[in-house]
Length: 425
Image (cartoon, rainbow, N blue to C red; front, side):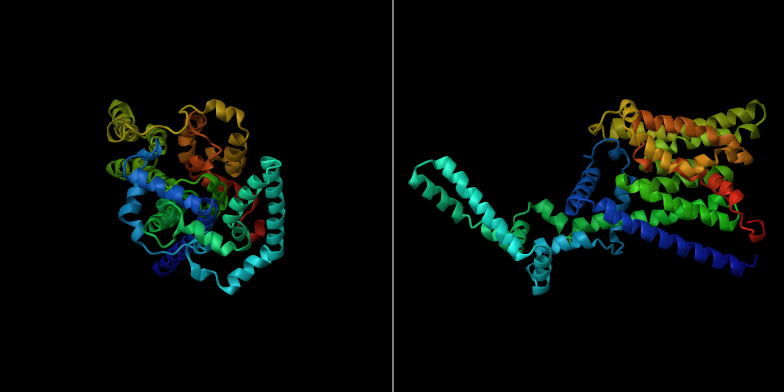
């Protein structure tokens, strides 16, 4: 293949990765970061501030890498992310200029004045009946209570929603008001996390394509990317800041192992990945063990491999111990550490993982066709067991390493049933 064609392919792959990432990231803005409108923003912003100050809950505090990347880099990249619902609520609460005749007409269309006046009328009847029940036959007390209620001018809160919403906006607590104001510095931090997600999604796609090329044709490797990205929406109900960061570093580790690159570089990748998810990085040591075991005959070779495996295992373990015992000893778990009973009794802990990994599971017997997978697949067993014991696999983002690892196997299996050659189809 000519250099020009290779360059064109790489450029096209980058464009596809950017488009897929932008679509998915935009979806997470609406479904994850904006699921409770500005309340979600408030919670996300508050979590970032607590992580930077070292006061976040465990184990999220130990995954501080994504927070510092945003604090010192990504929040300064001005990529706009549209969240129309949150923006609309923000303007309703904070901007008197929003309430034009058109905006008021929109409210009237969805919530007609006649209906609002009827609600007022019904409430007045209920209030009067309640006052009569409280005051009994005392006319003086009845009049006093009715005058007190009338002085509240509560009717206008229903008949004039614009005034009501602006009044609510004026009286919001300062930290909540900053979350509502989408132009605030705090929301720039939130956008920084979204931007980081976008770029790490692109990186994950590019690395997955490269990983797939060790087993698949260029077209099938691209299909593996599309398959991965099409499954990812299932992760958006519980989507962590570090999800794609950890996925990209895990893939980088896989590539370094399969290409037998510098061991020092692998250690560096595992260390960096541990700042996102040490519990994922630790399993790269098992993959290294399986892939290189038969390559080192003799005691010296086995000893060298043992030292490498122990080192790659020790890095994430030591990082976690350092974070929990020295850096952030005050961080407490927000849930019980052991989650086995919860998972055994919660049906979605089985349904969602099955759906998430269903396509790779269909072609599990293809694992033995590739030397790499045949030697290394065993790491999946302790990984899944760990997630059922100390995590909640209904949050299927936790199983992304398994999906990334098995996607080439799934695509290779699919290609047997849907061959690229038209004459064989």
